Image (cartoon, rainbow, N blue to C red; front, side, top):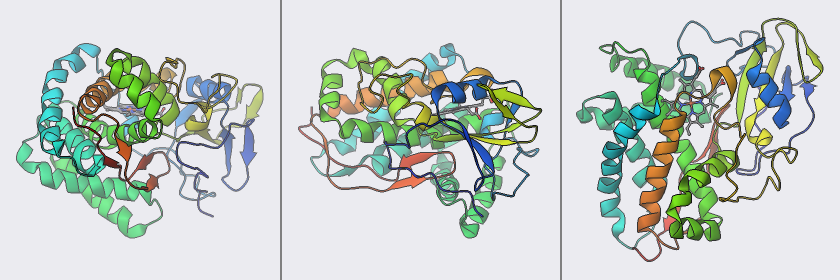
Amino acid sequence: MAIEPLANVPLSPPAPEDLYFSESQNAWILSRHRDVLAALRSADLSQARPPKTATDTNAKPAGEKVHSEIHIPLLSSHTSKWQTEINWLASALLQPLFANRPVDLVAEFIRPWCLDSAIALTGINPIHSARLARLVSHLSESDAAPHDAAAKSRATEANQKLDQFFLWSSASYEKSLFLGIAQTVPAFLASAWAALLQHPAEWKILQTHPDWIPKATEELLRYAGPVHSLFRQADRETSICGTRIAAGDRLILRLASANRDAQQFAEPDRLDIRRGATGHLALSSGFHYCSGASLVRMMTATATESILARYSESKLSNSFEWSCGTMLIWPSSLPVLPGRVV
Ligand code: HEM
């Protein structure tokens, strides 16, 4: 049996519940904040790939390096150096969007800006931009349809082609950096802005108080973080908050649900950009804490400030679809009718 898709109304993840073993997924399901945090910090659990089937025991990452296996020493000093460059890229892309017409923020700003930023920060020649956009879209399509064999084969090919761009690189983290920026950041920006557009009062407050953007970013990561689940496998017998986990057992950590745990956050389903959400798990915690965290915060602040400065009273002009993969969830488009242009 295939792994069950996450029953998920976007931006309304399933409510957290006590840790239990799911026979159908052949894995422990953890969704309370304290359980997920304990699992993330446990030295007895290792990162694992999402299982293809409930009986698939090959859940451990194989030799190939994946996004989450490479440690990137990204310091805030690196990210502030990059800020000027990506700020400039944002202005260049937003310039033609000034006209008072419906705009798909994902297609016309978020994706191209993240791709341009990834190209600039990894030093790839921008003449390859269109090709790279195609390769990244094959990877995202396959993420959104993990059981589609044709999409998977296109993604495998795209991955191999992408490797060619990093052959010259002495730093092993370049491809991971590229994918973090070109694939994961767009998922978050689109979710975060969808949440803000659905809460026009919060959009308005941020427009008046752009100095609250860092605080708002933490709340948006909590409320609309794109990584809904992570996967682990027990290296040895262990215990998570008093529950015995046998060696070899698999665990699914529901990050999005943990970030809505009322035992951790007051009124967890309310978006409150003044909350200053500390302790959210959107970027993980412990040993595998996201190495791109300072870059994520800087990119979110840069893009959000740019968009708020140009579009006032913007509203969603249409309904839109969400894509949900085994780990990530993101809006495929964000059709917006920009209000009065500042
Ligand atoms: C909003 C965008 C992002 C989100 C929500 C995010 C989230 C996460 C999460 C939840 C993990 C933990 C994985 C695990 O424990 O199994 C992680 C790890 C990681 N992330 Fe990100 N990430 C984002 C962007 C980035 C970017 C831009 C980079 C590249 C600079 C990056 C690089 C990494 C790396 C290298 C790890 C693995 C750290 C380790 O295993 O030691 N991420 N990220």
